[in-house]
Image (cartoon, rainbow, N blue to C red):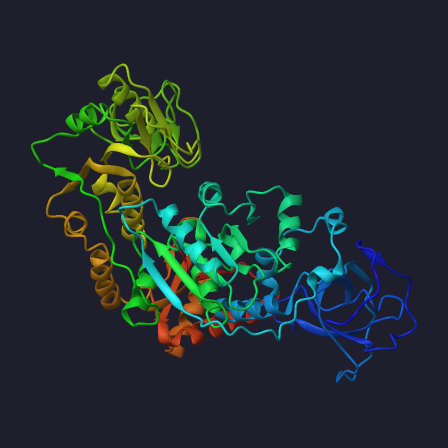
Length: 615
């Protein structure tokens, strides 16, 4: 990027331009077009007055048909191949080049994978603009050259964390080691993980990492995003969207727990951190760290695309399983003599489902949703429409005597408080997560993923059958990760109760120290069932007639595997389309072509998700 004169860092508007810029008067601009079937890149004229503000990466306003839309400058050109008359750029929103060539290249690759335009991913990669924050920055901050290369060997590793040590201590060690040679970007699932890593790094003398993510205020998020363009930042820590952060060539990218649901973007097109990181593998060393690898990572290990170099270790615990003579109550009582005890439960809330104690029919709302008690002393409420039933009676027999089916964390806390009087009971769930616990003897009732950081004398992990037998596409791999995380926080020679039979495959893998064995077994089943990670999947949803039309076309095409459409009572239907991962590019192209076709017809209620977290 060449030398430029100082700029006013605010949106710069100009009158109707009538003099073209003397130097490279054409700007090639990535336009936020109102229709998918239209091209994304167009040439515009640049006036001499705004020439120095229209730099590659700047956000501008341009006329498009009868509208005025936003666009990012890709490059400046001396001439155009367009034969029709060009329009002028109307205004410069920000002259800071926030869309770097590196980021545009990544967004283009990601768009090709997910069957969307680069612009559809920009809102994930570039935070909402805050004009006043831009005044703090100079254009020189953004003068990185894309031609810079690294002599550092690019490696790809998947590390299975040791159960003998806290996962964040292991992550800190990886960061320290990488910092010897390069900068480091670490992507973690949530704000709680950011805080724990920041503290762990600080304890090792690594202070003031740059944070990125939605946990920041709007101003701080945009400010830190702009700071990320300064390659003097040695450590960047962030949640999901941080995976797009600008990093020097050869800097290391570390992803913690890639199979966490938080690592998947909920908005369309539904990209995930793991896949974006893999798209950066040619320029950045990659490390995937987890206590139990995702099936996608395990597959890449199996085909030797990812290397794994450490053998997991575990502490010397005493492990008790369902059906053993020693009860969970005995384990809790013994554990409280030595410190805090963790009780893992599967559900938040109080009573999440109940029956009529007389006729044994499940309590349901008139809309069909199940009824539950959100907290102690509350009235039953519908899980779907949230209608309350202050005078609930069974619709089948008229008796008003509820019988609990599924206890939530709140109910467990009440029951354990009664069973162990004199000890404080602390509940940690997604609505109210506790960050850490000290050494005092207390009972911690926590849902999966919300276990406070600490050193526990014992752990009682309940609801094993519920956790490991859910119907979600990733329920087993997530359950393994969550339980192993809880187990890793139990002290040496502490006691653990697992609410699974002794012969259960997860229990056996823990006893043998073969922590990846369940993932390998599940992979074998996935391949025969034609499921991810061996197959890529697209979920299409629209009104029934449209889905039926698409289904008939796909059957005729005979290019992909297609399930029968599934209709719902609202008049919509969903269609699952899949293809072997080796032909995944064909599915991406089909998705893009289908969306363009629907756009050309004038609007569509069709929604598509490629590689969804769950089916």
